[in-house]
Length: 140
Length: 140
Image 1 (cartoon, chains in turn yellow, cyan):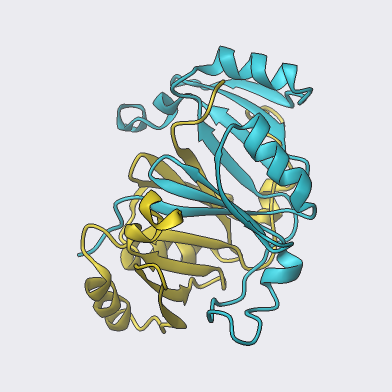
Image 2: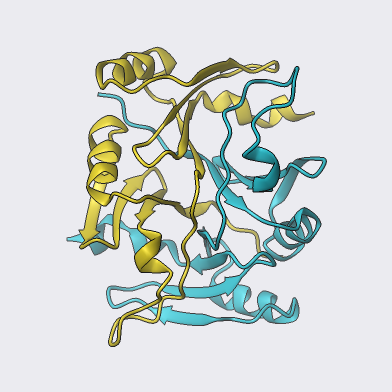
């Protein structure tokens, strides 16, 4: 019975691609793969990729002659969490502070692990969390 | 300069949590972690987790006495791609067919790698892709 080894693409939607490109590259520190006009900007992150789309474009579906990628596109604040590793929560708190990004919330989870919550320029809810939060040992 | 090791949480939004729970568990084959009422159902997937939320609940923010998790919640078709590995595209085509899930599109990418596109019960655009699609060697 097939089961996927991992998530390969995590997608989020934004209104302003320039602002998102700068934020995910310079504040989150993701490696940019490529940007396509005002449609998307893609980043590498661990074994997968992080895809930032403008729904106004992707929900229209492919242009004539383009690959027939099915339409999609969500509105409103989505959510993504990045692993705090390898640098750790303190390094991230410092980095976000230096970048002028407000920490909306900090949570110390009852079973272990800490999270920082903040927003990307489009208002998506982002989280940096210690991966121990999701270790199987925490889930009995 | 911190950079996250990987995406820890990939989120998607649905209207019907029962339908989503059955689909992601029985068709996609994800390991369920837990469900919380009509708010969410969480699954494990590789080094991260896949979170399925009902935006009607999450956009209201926490209930009194609950952990102060910031509100979020998107509407409209989102997108997630799962790695075809370790079973391969053919096994996935068979599995989706047996489950009665229509393949909306198949794409053989110009630089290598194949994708199957289909919809979850909420209309989100899902993809199963060969991970070679995003190998750095394809991105020169």
